[in-house]
Image 1: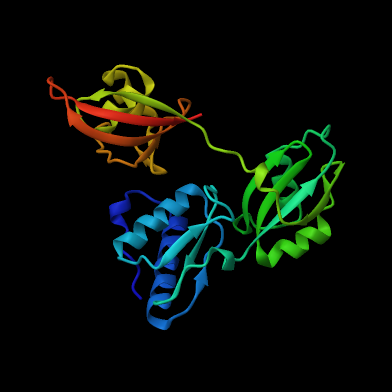
Image 2: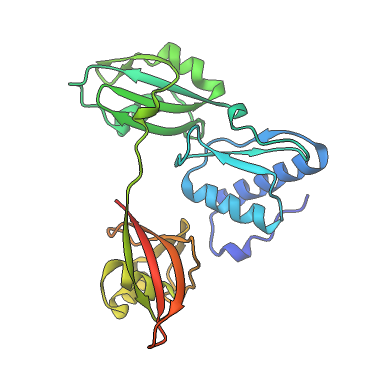
Length: 260
């Protein structure tokens, strides 16, 4: 299989190119050789890039899953034709760590403990930290090793077991923003989201850039569509939920949601 032409993604790293060509190769093997395959854990940006490439090659027999709904880090499951995508079959094992509530452990503490065991980041999914109880979603191949060797986080003793309490999963909350915009250009929508002038929004995008669906954009005229997720560093993350209906002044009715 020849390397993909990825020029439509703009300036991406060599590492991204390797990942995306490997993803396309897995899709080819699944579709033509009936091989079930799973990627390692991908971060949100990597997952979005892979999703874009899979759509470009018209492959849809796949599923992104991270061990629970709305997980940030996800594995791609590539399923052969005529087979169902079974989330329960993904090679993901949740491991819960319990400790004293007075021990103030952080996401960084858990990640550091994993890295000290020389565990690759791509085998680690989301790390959800709560008072006295935290869960890490791990690739199946390393779960037993973690269970046997990770009995301390820094100087804090922990107990660990397979499984997790669903109540520990945070519920994402949103704030709704409604208004109008002259167009679906990025600067127009950022202006509404941040309650600043269009000129200032364009300046922020041109100088610092914005993330649209986890891709770095520096063009204020970039066109958004319903469902697009965007953010400007330091100002939060938003979703363009709805765009429709025209005012008497020919402006578009816009509904956004902001992650809170």
